[in-house]
Length: 543
Image (cartoon, rainbow, N blue to C red; front, side, top):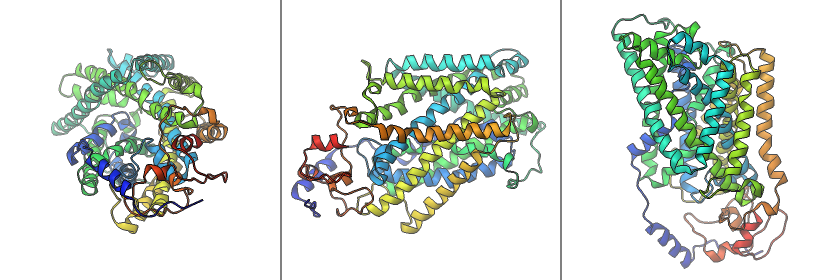
């Protein structure tokens, strides 16, 4: 097979000129900062960290330094360089091949599916606290049947509503973000400051150390869930190509966003710890109890029930938006030949109804953890940890992709590059991998602060559940058939396919080179050894 040209042709230059002439919307540094902050901050997990008092500050800062910052930088480089359709799937497939690209895409979706019952359990608790009195709220929120009914009811209503189209979900999500996260977060921090200034009793031990006791693994397990608090940068990174001078602006936006996020998380967590003794903290209910206690300190107890209503609305808005978004990515990749045609069906509004039905059934089955496990709190904890494990598996894949692409495609013009050259590359990935590995290990350890039943059963459920979900995408990939590919799909070939090489070999193209249509149709060598001239249609069909 003839090798591809290693120098740009005139038509390649013309194509670059055409691409550069296309005007793109511009995102400023502050706009990117706000985008990151509003998409990451959530009130749901603050109570779990209030268990640690002042030590929670260490965990938040640690997770920000070893996870959010390095992961954000790596995702930004990948998203700003491989901008064709496919997102996460394309980044990973360019570096590790489509099998790992499909696995990463699946994990990103599966993590959200496991997350649904957990966040809806929190929603059930917030809904319970809109009633009077608090003793009734507490009993209702801990009732398994009530929680299961709310989880399934809210999810399926939101699921059927999403069939009407993404626009309806987006409107609900925007309002939910404002009234369910931003306003309650600001209220919690302001009330905490007022509470302290009024000289009220503070329940956090003033002598509690900043540094955790690492010898007691069981007491620091809940801190591993902080990594899931910071999840989602792989989705925000797709906006990097629209920034002016992203090499300078994006790192600044990330660091500013980290500072804002840490301030909200830290002060919000401390506000809960100020008014609730450590022994009485509940992973799900303590946020609502904290609001009630803080409002009681200024003689406005009734406002606690209003905030509970806001938080419930926020959960509904968040779920309504997230129901459709991850599965739409699965649909796009599935049409390229990775899902059976029966799962690629859409309705008149373009919504992937078949996938949403499967997703809903999985959420319903996972919600039965409420019946199997000792309490609502333990079900919430185990689903949160399983979601964290699946998410971290995807994070590892992205880090390895970043390292591979730095080696195999060194000359590709990157819209943003992790600063520091080779040293920066290894520092960022080294810190990120070590941090994610530590969180992964901790996720399998039963926490001592809550009753999760038998520690052995807890670990077995986590291990078996995680292994099952981690294996599924490889089984699907092995069983894929040529007829799974939608003939109407327009998924572009990968760079290594166009060049006629494998993902593990080094590209010979010079920096900034754009292949011509003739080169895209050039001979391609496939994994099965077949080679020869192919058309674009055949090239796409081969993947």
